[in-house]
Length: 360
Image (cartoon, rainbow, N blue to C red; front, top):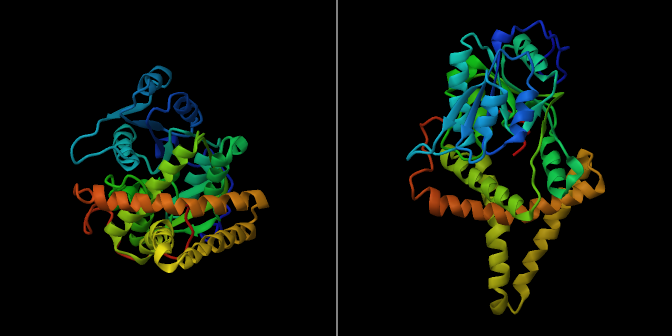
């Protein structure tokens, strides 16, 4: 048996795990042709597939029913106290899959804009079968058109994370069914960051979460404008703020403080204090190139080429401002509506995850 701390997976063996024990949950909203590519990539290793649709305005549901009639379709609608979220889609998709495939042991979660690698289901299911102490496993996610533009390059760098034992991962993952049910699925009240939160609860429950070196899926972020990237970065700040509100932990607090410091307080003091300080406060802005250089050097040490390292550093520094806006949105809009979540609900952190590296 392979050592659990070795991210090298066992050789894929399609016959080792029965299809009745492997299922796939796909989530999506307005994915259209992306969704058809994703469903078509799953293959015969899965005994059943469920698709949870978040009130698509396009023909996604009709396309699935026409081209993949065997797929169990869940059509979700937003209701008071039950908003749309990727976590809700995974929860409801899992429930539909469980009804369709009662003997399922391993569940692959897939976003509608992704395509599975042909060997991944066998690789991941075999790994979980041979490592009962592992609750979740993920692999290498790659951007479908990495060189399409700067935003696609940034996404691919975000997906490229070190293998081994981790405490965070993205939503493309295979989960042991008994573990999913034991921890209660994902926190549907979190609009983002729900994957990290799930990992922490799985770790709290006594399991490990692993990232393998094997190719898992292709992702298509389909991002073409700065506005799209900015909106995503604001959402990240909101997720960090909500994560701290739920967990009251040092890790989320550090992210929030960094965003507020670089994204709001530093520029506010530097510019706002310029008249009184006769411009001396503007020297505080030198913190930005220092931060940029620190990030750029770190990415170069990770193996990025010079162009990628500079791009990543620039996006991270600018993203602090967007993140601060996301924190402000959580404090001024989400919390007053009573949608922040509370400790003690699903999602309350009860332990400390081991050292690891996630994508967030």
